[in-house]
Length: 183
Image 1: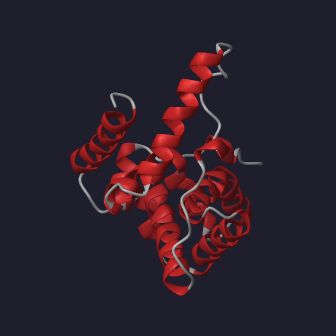
Image 2: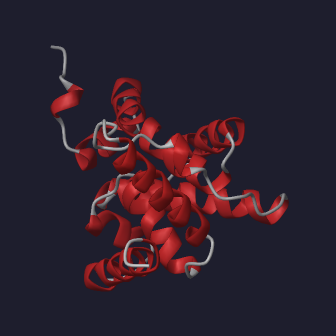
């Protein structure tokens, strides 16, 4: 009987993936893009992000502790990715911040030239100020928006309570809004 892995929860897939290549493939397909985006946000380099994504999943394959990850698989997986990115920066250099021009906006491009110019000005301001955020606030934004984790999952990666993580994100967004929108 064929299993429909797409319908299984992460924790169940992680439990099965230890002995079932198809379950691991389903987890890989589910998380390869969010892990890549997160690594790209940390490195600003496609090739390095691909390498770090591969290293993250290799670490999962080599891990003997799927049970630990199965309790909160996304937090465990992003924790591995976070450590791989930290190792990359320790071994190499601190890469420049990702250009916000490369990120797709959720809204369609405005037709109005003034509105487009305003939006471009805001994005440039945010790009400049991201580097000025505290490391914790910047990491919270990366996990939440580039990595696509829920508040709960991202909080677990940063080893914080969900309330503390929400406060980090809220304060980071307030800092950016205060300096770029109301300025």
